[in-house]
Amino acid sequence: MKFVRIDRNKCIRKKVKGLYIEAFPKEERLNFNVLLHKAKGKKADFLAVYEDDRYVGLVYLIHYEDSVFLFFFAIVPELRGMGYGSKVLRALRSIFADKKITLLIESTSEECDNLEERLNRKLFYEKNGFVACGYELIEKGVRYDCMSSPVAVSKESFSELLKDYWGKVIYKVYYRI
Image 1 (tube, rainbow, N blue to C red):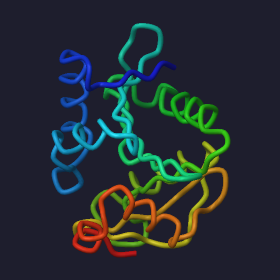
Image 2 (cartoon, rainbow, N blue to C red; image 1 turned 90 degrees about the vertical axis):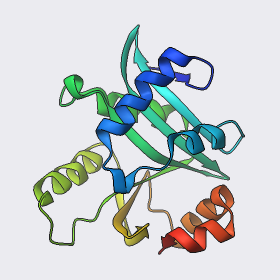
Image 3 (cartoon, one colour; image 1 turned 30 degrees about the horizontal axis):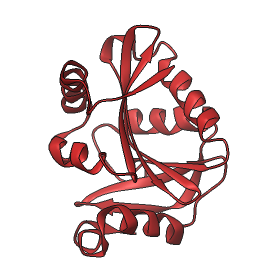
Image 4 (cartoon, rainbow, N blue to C red; image 1 turned 30 degrees about the vertical axis):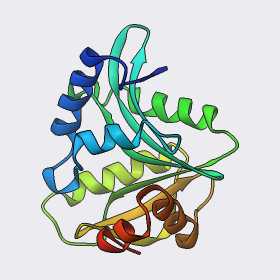
């Protein structure tokens, strides 16, 4: 797996933006340009994922102390279910072997139309070495379960990561843990 910054290449950026819009519901997306801008600093990376020369997906990573937050992660639709997601996660766990990787999935404890999909997503991450952290996070009104690898990340530690990235004011407006 090869990870390529998207801020330097307009063609790659266009592919990533298309996947970002396709993969995430509007209520879960943030402004693409805000994500690009935040990734210009040292706290985040917005990356296209390639296997050889084939574009396979995107990752958006937030870095803080001994943690990496996998904020956004998507595989192109025609490659889903073919093992690419697991390959990307293995590569990230190898690159960040000395860090805890945290991610959020839509809550699996609330009634919804896509509960089976949510449970399958949770199982996918468990099969790839992630564990439930034991708390939920609410972001812009959407409930998420927190998972991390190789061990659970405390909600205090995760809150600090979000505050460091967004600032305390934005954190207070958009997040509840």
